[in-house]
Image (cartoon, rainbow, N blue to C red; front, side, top):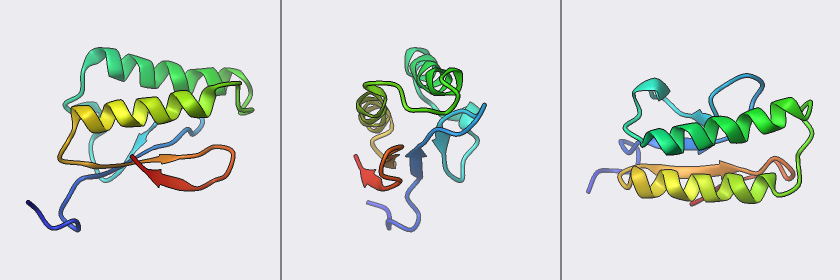
Amino acid sequence: MTDSDDQLQLRVMWDWHAFPVWGHVDVDGLPISDPLRRRLQEWSDARTSAGGSIPDGWDQEGRRLAAQLRNELPEAIVAYHDGRTGQDGSQ
């Protein structure tokens, strides 16, 4: 087991026209499945298309995507940034 300071730390979080996985990592090189990568981008695009407002069910889907990211990268610490509260929560 690695020290948590050395562990990959990621945050699923929306921002304008950006891939919604943040951390000190090259997100293009993240070893995640193509379907998850697509779903993450579609999730982000939905809020961008809504002008930044939060569509119904959007945070719930974000939490599901963060959990799936954690399943695909079990060595990482994954948090979800809640768009309504502005708080992070571990997955």
